[in-house]
Length: 344
Image (tube, rainbow, N blue to C red; front, side, top):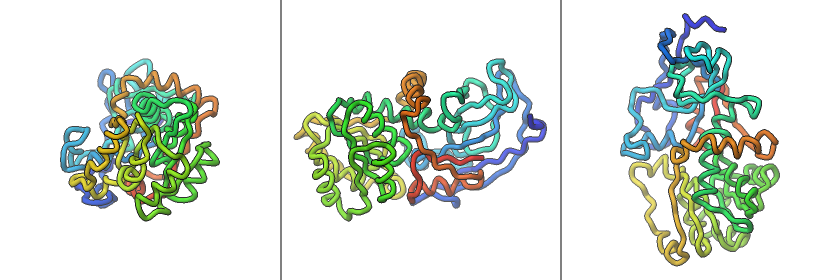
Protein backbone atom coordinates (compact mmCIF):
# COMPACT_ATOMS: atom_id res chain seq x y z
CA UNK A 1 0.00 0.00 0.00
CA UNK A 2 1.42 3.37 -0.99
CA UNK A 3 1.23 6.39 1.24
CA UNK A 4 -1.92 7.93 -0.20
CA UNK A 5 -1.27 11.18 1.63
CA UNK A 6 1.60 11.95 -0.74
CA UNK A 7 0.36 11.30 -4.29
CA UNK A 8 2.01 13.37 -7.01
CA UNK A 9 -0.28 13.20 -10.02
CA UNK A 10 1.15 13.70 -13.49
CA UNK A 11 -1.17 14.75 -16.31
CA UNK A 12 -0.82 15.29 -20.03
CA UNK A 13 -2.84 18.39 -20.92
CA UNK A 14 -4.13 18.85 -24.47
CA UNK A 15 -3.08 22.42 -25.31
CA UNK A 16 -3.41 23.06 -29.05
CA UNK A 17 -5.29 21.78 -32.11
CA UNK A 18 -3.09 19.85 -34.58
CA UNK A 19 -3.48 20.76 -38.25
CA UNK A 20 -1.68 17.60 -39.39
CA UNK A 21 -0.29 14.67 -37.44
CA UNK A 22 -0.67 15.04 -33.69
CA UNK A 23 2.48 14.97 -31.58
CA UNK A 24 4.14 16.03 -28.31
CA UNK A 25 3.98 19.70 -29.34
CA UNK A 26 0.21 19.62 -28.81
CA UNK A 27 0.51 18.64 -25.13
CA UNK A 28 1.98 19.95 -21.89
CA UNK A 29 3.03 17.86 -18.89
CA UNK A 30 1.60 19.06 -15.57
CA UNK A 31 2.17 17.85 -12.03
CA UNK A 32 -0.06 18.38 -9.01
CA UNK A 33 -0.42 17.00 -5.52
CA UNK A 34 -3.68 15.07 -5.59
CA UNK A 35 -6.15 15.49 -2.75
CA UNK A 36 -6.66 11.86 -1.73
CA UNK A 37 -9.49 12.46 0.72
CA UNK A 38 -12.25 10.16 -0.49
CA UNK A 39 -15.85 11.26 -0.48
CA UNK A 40 -18.67 8.74 -0.23
CA UNK A 41 -18.45 6.21 -3.06
CA UNK A 42 -15.07 7.38 -4.33
CA UNK A 43 -12.03 5.28 -5.25
CA UNK A 44 -8.37 6.23 -5.65
CA UNK A 45 -6.72 4.56 -8.65
CA UNK A 46 -3.11 4.41 -9.87
CA UNK A 47 -2.79 3.97 -13.64
CA UNK A 48 -0.94 0.89 -14.89
CA UNK A 49 -1.83 0.89 -18.59
CA UNK A 50 -3.13 3.84 -20.60
CA UNK A 51 -4.83 3.46 -23.97
CA UNK A 52 -3.79 5.20 -27.18
CA UNK A 53 -6.50 5.20 -29.88
CA UNK A 54 -7.25 6.78 -33.29
CA UNK A 55 -10.51 8.30 -32.01
CA UNK A 56 -8.43 10.72 -29.94
CA UNK A 57 -7.43 12.48 -33.15
CA UNK A 58 -11.08 12.66 -34.26
CA UNK A 59 -11.94 14.41 -31.01
CA UNK A 60 -9.35 17.06 -31.85
CA UNK A 61 -11.33 18.26 -34.83
CA UNK A 62 -12.27 21.92 -34.74
CA UNK A 63 -15.80 20.92 -35.77
CA UNK A 64 -18.36 18.79 -33.90
CA UNK A 65 -17.92 15.03 -34.39
CA UNK A 66 -19.44 12.00 -32.69
CA UNK A 67 -18.45 13.62 -29.39
CA UNK A 68 -20.65 16.55 -30.42
CA UNK A 69 -18.03 19.10 -29.41
CA UNK A 70 -14.24 18.94 -29.88
CA UNK A 71 -11.96 17.90 -27.03
CA UNK A 72 -11.59 21.01 -24.86
CA UNK A 73 -8.19 22.64 -24.82
CA UNK A 74 -6.24 22.85 -21.57
CA UNK A 75 -7.83 19.71 -20.16
CA UNK A 76 -6.51 16.20 -19.51
CA UNK A 77 -6.45 14.03 -22.63
CA UNK A 78 -9.38 11.59 -22.49
CA UNK A 79 -8.43 7.90 -22.54
CA UNK A 80 -9.26 4.47 -21.23
CA UNK A 81 -7.08 3.32 -18.33
CA UNK A 82 -6.41 0.09 -16.48
CA UNK A 83 -5.34 0.81 -12.92
CA UNK A 84 -4.88 -0.55 -9.44
CA UNK A 85 -7.11 0.51 -6.56
CA UNK A 86 -5.05 2.27 -3.86
CA UNK A 87 -7.94 3.14 -1.56
CA UNK A 88 -11.68 2.63 -1.72
CA UNK A 89 -14.82 3.98 -0.14
CA UNK A 90 -17.00 1.07 -1.34
CA UNK A 91 -16.98 -2.56 -0.16
CA UNK A 92 -16.89 -4.24 -3.56
CA UNK A 93 -13.56 -2.62 -4.47
CA UNK A 94 -10.53 -3.21 -2.31
CA UNK A 95 -6.94 -2.01 -2.41
CA UNK A 96 -5.09 -4.13 -4.96
CA UNK A 97 -8.10 -4.75 -7.23
CA UNK A 98 -7.61 -4.01 -10.92
CA UNK A 99 -10.15 -1.75 -12.61
CA UNK A 100 -10.81 -0.10 -15.96
CA UNK A 101 -12.36 3.27 -16.70
CA UNK A 102 -12.12 6.49 -18.71
CA UNK A 103 -9.59 8.18 -16.43
CA UNK A 104 -7.49 10.02 -19.01
CA UNK A 105 -3.78 10.55 -19.44
CA UNK A 106 -2.85 10.88 -15.79
CA UNK A 107 -0.99 8.71 -13.32
CA UNK A 108 -3.70 8.83 -10.62
CA UNK A 109 -7.41 9.54 -10.40
CA UNK A 110 -9.98 9.94 -7.65
CA UNK A 111 -13.34 8.95 -9.14
CA UNK A 112 -16.77 7.62 -8.24
CA UNK A 113 -16.92 3.82 -8.27
CA UNK A 114 -19.69 3.78 -10.87
CA UNK A 115 -17.19 4.91 -13.52
CA UNK A 116 -15.04 1.81 -12.99
CA UNK A 117 -15.25 -1.80 -14.13
CA UNK A 118 -13.66 -4.39 -11.85
CA UNK A 119 -11.48 -6.81 -13.80
CA UNK A 120 -11.18 -10.56 -13.51
CA UNK A 121 -7.48 -11.15 -14.22
CA UNK A 122 -7.99 -14.93 -14.18
CA UNK A 123 -9.57 -14.70 -17.66
CA UNK A 124 -6.87 -12.60 -19.29
CA UNK A 125 -4.20 -10.04 -18.38
CA UNK A 126 -5.56 -6.77 -17.03
CA UNK A 127 -4.28 -4.91 -20.11
CA UNK A 128 -6.76 -6.84 -22.27
CA UNK A 129 -9.53 -4.67 -20.81
CA UNK A 130 -8.27 -1.93 -23.13
CA UNK A 131 -8.11 -4.28 -26.12
CA UNK A 132 -9.80 -7.57 -26.92
CA UNK A 133 -11.97 -7.44 -23.77
CA UNK A 134 -12.56 -3.72 -23.99
CA UNK A 135 -13.57 -1.06 -26.47
CA UNK A 136 -11.77 -2.53 -29.52
CA UNK A 137 -13.19 -5.99 -28.87
CA UNK A 138 -16.68 -4.60 -28.43
CA UNK A 139 -16.35 -2.61 -31.66
CA UNK A 140 -15.05 -5.58 -33.62
CA UNK A 141 -17.60 -8.11 -32.36
CA UNK A 142 -20.78 -6.09 -32.69
CA UNK A 143 -19.62 -4.11 -35.71
CA UNK A 144 -18.99 -7.32 -37.63
CA UNK A 145 -21.85 -9.48 -36.37
CA UNK A 146 -24.63 -6.89 -36.33
CA UNK A 147 -23.67 -4.40 -39.05
CA UNK A 148 -21.65 -6.79 -41.24
CA UNK A 149 -23.96 -9.79 -40.74
CA UNK A 150 -21.42 -12.36 -42.03
CA UNK A 151 -22.45 -15.76 -43.35
CA UNK A 152 -20.34 -18.86 -43.79
CA UNK A 153 -18.58 -18.94 -47.14
CA UNK A 154 -18.70 -15.18 -47.68
CA UNK A 155 -15.65 -13.01 -48.33
CA UNK A 156 -14.85 -10.45 -45.65
CA UNK A 157 -12.28 -7.75 -46.39
CA UNK A 158 -10.81 -5.79 -43.48
CA UNK A 159 -8.73 -2.64 -43.86
CA UNK A 160 -6.38 -1.65 -41.06
CA UNK A 161 -6.28 -5.40 -40.47
CA UNK A 162 -3.20 -5.39 -38.22
CA UNK A 163 -4.72 -2.88 -35.80
CA UNK A 164 -6.55 -3.40 -32.53
CA UNK A 165 -10.01 -3.66 -34.13
CA UNK A 166 -9.14 -5.04 -37.57
CA UNK A 167 -7.11 -7.97 -36.25
CA UNK A 168 -10.08 -9.07 -34.16
CA UNK A 169 -12.65 -8.55 -36.92
CA UNK A 170 -10.76 -10.96 -39.17
CA UNK A 171 -10.55 -13.62 -36.48
CA UNK A 172 -14.23 -13.27 -35.59
CA UNK A 173 -15.10 -13.55 -39.29
CA UNK A 174 -13.11 -16.78 -39.55
CA UNK A 175 -15.10 -18.16 -36.63
CA UNK A 176 -18.24 -17.44 -38.64
CA UNK A 177 -16.92 -19.58 -41.49
CA UNK A 178 -15.92 -16.69 -43.75
CA UNK A 179 -12.95 -16.25 -46.02
CA UNK A 180 -10.94 -13.25 -44.86
CA UNK A 181 -8.64 -10.84 -46.68
CA UNK A 182 -6.72 -8.36 -44.58
CA UNK A 183 -5.23 -5.14 -45.90
CA UNK A 184 -2.26 -3.78 -43.94
CA UNK A 185 0.88 -1.71 -44.43
CA UNK A 186 4.07 -3.68 -44.95
CA UNK A 187 5.13 -7.25 -45.67
CA UNK A 188 5.79 -8.02 -42.01
CA UNK A 189 2.24 -7.15 -40.95
CA UNK A 190 0.80 -9.14 -43.85
CA UNK A 191 2.85 -12.18 -42.87
CA UNK A 192 1.54 -11.86 -39.31
CA UNK A 193 -2.06 -11.81 -40.58
CA UNK A 194 -1.48 -15.02 -42.52
CA UNK A 195 0.80 -16.97 -40.20
CA UNK A 196 -0.43 -15.93 -36.77
CA UNK A 197 -4.06 -14.88 -37.23
CA UNK A 198 -5.01 -17.39 -39.92
CA UNK A 199 -6.35 -14.97 -42.53
CA UNK A 200 -6.81 -16.48 -45.99
CA UNK A 201 -5.17 -13.61 -47.84
CA UNK A 202 -3.24 -10.46 -46.97
CA UNK A 203 -2.45 -7.48 -49.19
CA UNK A 204 0.17 -4.80 -48.56
CA UNK A 205 -1.41 -1.54 -49.65
CA UNK A 206 1.98 0.18 -49.45
CA UNK A 207 3.15 -1.86 -52.43
CA UNK A 208 0.58 -0.11 -54.62
CA UNK A 209 0.71 3.42 -55.98
CA UNK A 210 -2.94 3.66 -56.97
CA UNK A 211 -6.40 2.38 -56.09
CA UNK A 212 -6.63 0.66 -59.48
CA UNK A 213 -3.47 -1.33 -58.82
CA UNK A 214 -4.64 -2.31 -55.34
CA UNK A 215 -8.07 -3.29 -56.67
CA UNK A 216 -6.51 -5.50 -59.31
CA UNK A 217 -4.64 -7.54 -56.70
CA UNK A 218 -7.66 -7.83 -54.41
CA UNK A 219 -9.91 -8.93 -57.27
CA UNK A 220 -7.38 -11.55 -58.37
CA UNK A 221 -7.52 -13.08 -54.90
CA UNK A 222 -11.19 -12.89 -53.89
CA UNK A 223 -13.19 -12.01 -57.00
CA UNK A 224 -15.81 -10.02 -55.11
CA UNK A 225 -16.45 -8.75 -51.59
CA UNK A 226 -19.48 -9.56 -49.43
CA UNK A 227 -18.50 -7.63 -46.27
CA UNK A 228 -16.07 -4.73 -46.18
CA UNK A 229 -15.05 -3.66 -42.67
CA UNK A 230 -13.34 -0.32 -43.18
CA UNK A 231 -10.98 1.25 -40.66
CA UNK A 232 -8.99 3.32 -43.14
CA UNK A 233 -10.94 5.01 -45.94
CA UNK A 234 -9.03 6.87 -48.66
CA UNK A 235 -7.32 4.98 -51.47
CA UNK A 236 -7.99 1.61 -49.86
CA UNK A 237 -11.75 2.12 -49.89
CA UNK A 238 -11.56 3.46 -53.45
CA UNK A 239 -10.03 0.10 -54.35
CA UNK A 240 -12.42 -2.16 -52.43
CA UNK A 241 -15.84 -0.64 -52.93
CA UNK A 242 -16.03 -1.20 -56.72
CA UNK A 243 -15.50 -4.92 -55.98
CA UNK A 244 -18.55 -5.40 -53.75
CA UNK A 245 -21.00 -8.19 -54.53
CA UNK A 246 -24.79 -8.02 -54.67
CA UNK A 247 -26.26 -7.23 -51.23
CA UNK A 248 -22.82 -6.49 -49.79
CA UNK A 249 -22.51 -4.83 -46.41
CA UNK A 250 -19.99 -2.06 -45.82
CA UNK A 251 -19.16 -1.23 -42.20
CA UNK A 252 -17.49 2.12 -41.62
CA UNK A 253 -15.58 1.92 -38.37
CA UNK A 254 -12.89 4.51 -39.08
CA UNK A 255 -11.17 6.62 -41.73
CA UNK A 256 -7.69 6.96 -40.30
CA UNK A 257 -6.28 7.98 -43.68
CA UNK A 258 -8.22 11.24 -43.34
CA UNK A 259 -7.61 12.13 -39.71
CA UNK A 260 -4.33 14.02 -40.08
CA UNK A 261 -5.17 16.06 -43.17
CA UNK A 262 -8.85 15.85 -44.05
CA UNK A 263 -10.57 15.82 -40.68
CA UNK A 264 -11.89 19.38 -40.77
CA UNK A 265 -11.93 19.71 -44.57
CA UNK A 266 -12.76 16.28 -45.97
CA UNK A 267 -11.11 15.62 -49.32
CA UNK A 268 -13.01 12.46 -50.27
CA UNK A 269 -16.31 12.81 -52.08
CA UNK A 270 -19.24 10.34 -52.27
CA UNK A 271 -18.07 8.91 -55.60
CA UNK A 272 -18.77 5.35 -54.47
CA UNK A 273 -22.53 5.77 -54.26
CA UNK A 274 -23.27 4.39 -57.72
CA UNK A 275 -21.68 1.11 -56.65
CA UNK A 276 -24.07 1.02 -53.70
CA UNK A 277 -26.96 1.49 -56.10
CA UNK A 278 -25.87 -1.12 -58.65
CA UNK A 279 -25.28 -3.80 -56.01
CA UNK A 280 -28.17 -2.76 -53.74
CA UNK A 281 -25.62 -2.78 -50.94
CA UNK A 282 -25.84 -1.23 -47.51
CA UNK A 283 -23.38 0.98 -45.71
CA UNK A 284 -23.43 1.63 -41.98
CA UNK A 285 -21.23 3.64 -39.67
CA UNK A 286 -20.60 2.17 -36.22
CA UNK A 287 -19.06 3.47 -33.00
CA UNK A 288 -17.98 1.58 -29.90
CA UNK A 289 -20.41 3.64 -27.85
CA UNK A 290 -23.30 2.15 -29.84
CA UNK A 291 -22.75 -1.10 -27.94
CA UNK A 292 -21.53 0.14 -24.56
CA UNK A 293 -24.69 -1.09 -22.86
CA UNK A 294 -23.94 -4.58 -24.20
CA UNK A 295 -20.45 -4.88 -22.74
CA UNK A 296 -21.42 -7.80 -20.49
CA UNK A 297 -22.86 -9.64 -23.49
CA UNK A 298 -19.60 -9.23 -25.42
CA UNK A 299 -17.52 -10.38 -22.44
CA UNK A 300 -19.70 -13.48 -22.05
CA UNK A 301 -19.18 -14.38 -25.72
CA UNK A 302 -15.56 -13.37 -26.32
CA UNK A 303 -14.15 -13.93 -22.83
CA UNK A 304 -14.22 -17.75 -23.08
CA UNK A 305 -12.52 -17.58 -26.50
CA UNK A 306 -9.73 -15.47 -25.02
CA UNK A 307 -9.43 -17.64 -21.92
CA UNK A 308 -9.14 -20.76 -24.11
CA UNK A 309 -6.42 -19.19 -26.25
CA UNK A 310 -8.60 -19.19 -29.35
CA UNK A 311 -8.15 -15.48 -30.11
CA UNK A 312 -4.81 -13.81 -30.77
CA UNK A 313 -4.61 -10.38 -29.17
CA UNK A 314 -1.25 -8.78 -29.66
CA UNK A 315 -0.27 -5.69 -27.71
CA UNK A 316 2.38 -3.14 -28.59
CA UNK A 317 3.46 -1.76 -25.21
CA UNK A 318 5.40 1.49 -24.88
CA UNK A 319 6.99 2.05 -21.48
CA UNK A 320 6.82 5.36 -19.65
CA UNK A 321 4.15 7.97 -18.92
CA UNK A 322 6.29 10.55 -20.69
CA UNK A 323 5.88 8.62 -23.96
CA UNK A 324 2.11 9.10 -24.34
CA UNK A 325 2.08 11.94 -26.92
CA UNK A 326 4.76 10.21 -29.01
CA UNK A 327 2.80 6.96 -28.83
CA UNK A 328 -0.31 8.69 -30.18
CA UNK A 329 1.80 10.14 -32.99
CA UNK A 330 2.99 6.63 -33.89
CA UNK A 331 -0.57 5.53 -34.69
CA UNK A 332 -0.33 7.68 -37.82
CA UNK A 333 3.25 6.87 -38.76
CA UNK A 334 3.04 3.07 -38.54
CA UNK A 335 5.07 0.42 -36.77
CA UNK A 336 2.72 -0.94 -34.14
CA UNK A 337 0.64 -4.11 -34.32
CA UNK A 338 -2.54 -4.94 -32.44
CA UNK A 339 -3.49 -2.77 -29.48
CA UNK A 340 -1.18 0.15 -28.61
CA UNK A 341 -0.71 0.75 -24.88
CA UNK A 342 1.54 2.81 -22.65
CA UNK A 343 2.64 1.08 -19.46
CA UNK A 344 3.16 3.31 -16.45
